[in-house]
Length: 205
Image 1 (cartoon, rainbow, N blue to C red):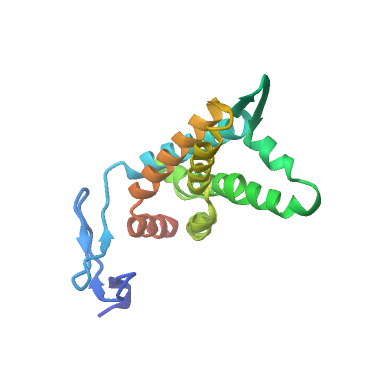
Image 2: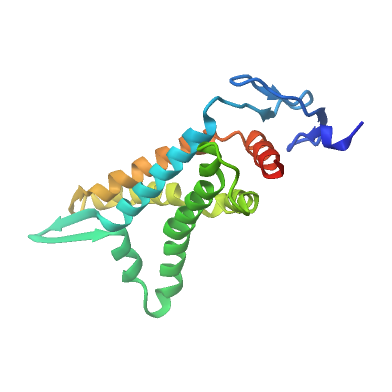
């Protein structure tokens, strides 16, 4: 049998015939039950729109006020950018760079890479040059794009700070919360085997 007509389960490496799966149907591994393909009609368009929405929300989350603390007549408003710059000197500079890199730069770069790889196909065009490499890079940095970890950490911190000062959530907080929801929906909507197959087929045509 031609090896190009086979696909391996990413979990248990069981080999299966590489067949077309109708939209809204699911192909699972016969050995361990892992989902091998779950194509959906209009998936490229939806993924592209969600990635663009996430990128816009990321810009809003960085630029707008994140929260305001008030205690004993004093008030302090801060954005995510202010939090990054607050530790940009001295021994805390590496922490500042890590926050900027993992919470802002990597997620934004991942959204841009997904848009670069999939947006032309969503419009019915051929994939952009190096689209396969861009999507592969976006998948590799996924574990390091930690915007959702940041919002969980902020929620825990707010619980502790709320007893010491009055906390008002700014528009950037809600933009970040919406960003996490959109990112989760986008990642769950991507059928990676289908995306890879589509990229390879359209790159050859």
